[in-house]
Image 1: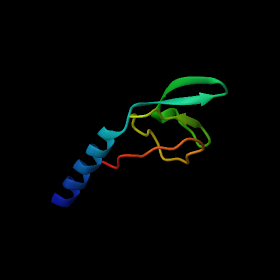
Image 2: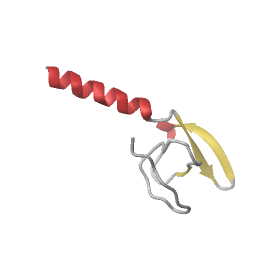
Image 3: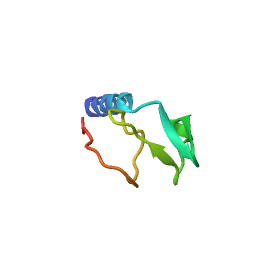
Image 4: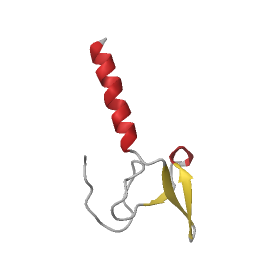
Length: 68
């Protein structure tokens, strides 16, 4: 039971690191959407210093990511 409790706590801490919204690119428009609204194929803008809201592939640009 203790290991289950520790694993649950670790998952809660990881969830706290995720942002609650993302900036989705739709054509020339940027819209703020909830993370739960993201779907496969969505293009997401990640600005310097911002948290990465979801797994994905970098289509353009380059940067370093802090793997806290």
